[in-house]
Image (cartoon, rainbow, N blue to C red; front, side, top):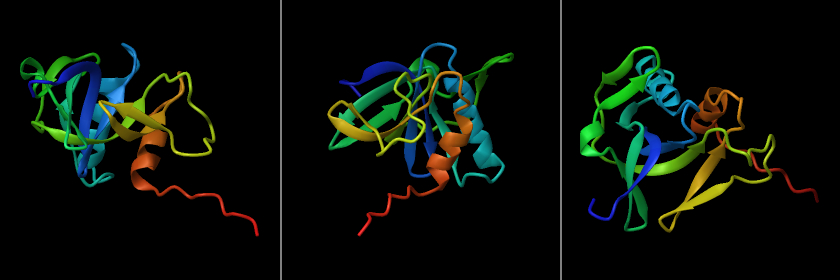
Length: 153
């Protein structure tokens, strides 16, 4: 990934696509990443594996956004109270959505699915308000379908 930009984020492959988890320091990126991985181990999600924690290399390639860990951080995740731990990881994944923790623009009932543009690629965005646990919204985002309002006749 010679043209890859490195961003402060975590990424987890959930099913066929990765979630890019962004947010300020201490907002819970690593905690959410680990929770997704544990949800797959317990059967709540079909599959989840770490791609990168703390820093993620992103590269737009053929209309897709690719994510991978910098070599020095591959397979490492920070677990609060335990420090840096090693775990199985995916060397690369296609990003399918972005979770923004502590997002100032999070809406309780958005009219439409927000999107974010990264490297010329538009991706679904789930903004999570500061002080809100991301887990219920992220789990629902991954396991339920959106229901568009029914047009009146």
